[in-house]
Length: 285
Image 1 (tube, rainbow, N blue to C red):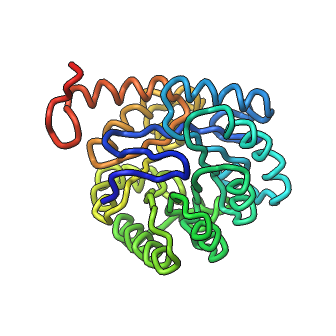
Image 2: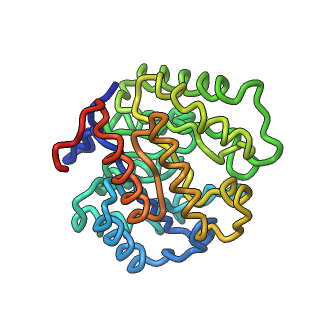
């Protein structure tokens, strides 16, 4: 198991739960309705998340909500590059580019991004080549199909084992091409029913056993709204916090969230109660 992530000039020890703050530079995000589809507002929000305790900032310029259409490389770069260029010299945390387009990943890495978050799990050989070339950490996520169609009657023989087999296969491909800094993500909400999502949360340790850091992304997602009856994604904080804590209890190393301050505080309380990851009491109390 990796004890740290080497993100170019940054090293992130995995001695505690790490917070990945979400920054959607899109006009059609399910979670914030295009609130940060403006360079100045996006940069301001990124600074705020860093101040609130984000360990990584994950910047995306193409919505991956269910039913989302493909965004051109040119349009995606127009959205994210101005933000990344500003942030790499202004904030003191690694910048992740959330994209499944190799051309976008390459351009962002060339301009200083520190890691890649690929919702398609490195299925594109060109993306594997880019990551191997820059030797940065990459989030390898499971998604059934593609955003446009992923929520149309998703079906699995065995959701846990099917996802595990996919991740195992992609890990083998990545390692064969010289990619070793992998982070696995079972892809909550990406081609899954509410029951699939709950089953994944109950069985996260199956994915932890793959031997790589585990990322969990439940923030504001639809299944929380279905459970609680809350339609507005921005009002799903309580459910987000519960799923994050359950995820950490079951092995998550990184949680990807919109509400950094509240989620960070919840994690701090949980980890103070439980002690450090090796089971010893923290020395700061």
